Length: 172
Image (cartoon, rainbow, N blue to C red; front, side):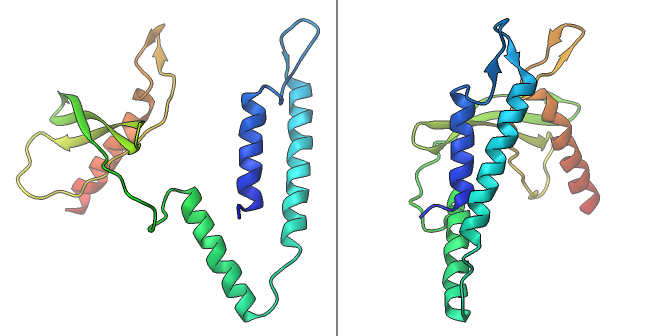
């Protein structure tokens, strides 16, 4: 059974994808105020549903344990952290690399599920003389435009990797 919040998120993303959250004005442009009002009303309805569902609190220690365990399992599934889920081959593929200021950036992609590709960058020092901690940082998309030039959709996140690098070097 899915939790109310999971259902709410699915309804919200479906409504947004279908354009149900913004109403067009007479000029054909989205009416942002009307969209905000409809979105607020939507969230108010969803919060009411969640509050109604949670008003029936589990009674007794055993019921609470069952509720707790079920809730944890649902959360793990939603976050992709279900330890019992079937694991598939990631098929990690390095597509290129470049060096900048002593740091090698490896471009790669892997399949989080068969056919679902995730791109990532692996930042590492050019010279490695001992085992190093590793963080594979999977960034989202950003718009990095400076003086009319687009620098790509990942450049907005590069400073995160450099911050991790400085933390790792100060810890060793």
